[in-house]
Length: 296
Image (cartoon, rainbow, N blue to C red; front, side, top):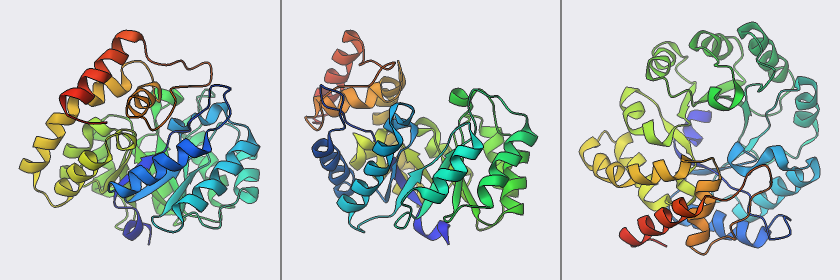
């Protein structure tokens, strides 16, 4: 059951690039080992944080296989396969190397702005062909369309292969509606690092995190304490992370997390256009945060 494998902290891995904009596999190996060594329960490759809109199909396949190789069965792996062309996603689910994947994370369609019925039919089509459990991904800040609690619950109840959700609406009431009525074995994960502590208090079981790329030790410990309902201790850690959350998302993701990782010496600070590195002022704020907390 998916809930037994993916509780806790999953890391939405970045994709490091060299100056010539090729994928930097040496740096990626460093990041993967860093997050696993510092407590991540699982990793997610080809999420939005990995700049997937700018990756070719060949690069995506190579990144999946490389992640399998480096992780080497130490933790579960989730593969991101989402987008706004349902027919293309069906082909990807049938052709991508998913043999070692625990699940597929699939963002709801972006830009097209489908109705709730369109979102339902999209995921229904994926559910009928997927070789692995699907984790829905609701992130209206990126897609332009919220997937309502009613749509999530309908999919969860009608298709057992749709086994969880990464809910990143930032709407606590919507989160509570899902948690109230979801099937018992449906995995409820957050996609909002800054809200996960109170969301766990409401019943969420973990998070797919951006912050855990660069601050895995502090973040994963905060999640573990929260899951034990030791919110007094968890709050102390979360209070230290609040400033980092702001810096990580001040301009765009993953510019923020790449700035942290570059300052820590794990990667070079390159992004593929149309994304660009953090502005100089924010970069200095990242440096100051890491120095203040003796990190990096």
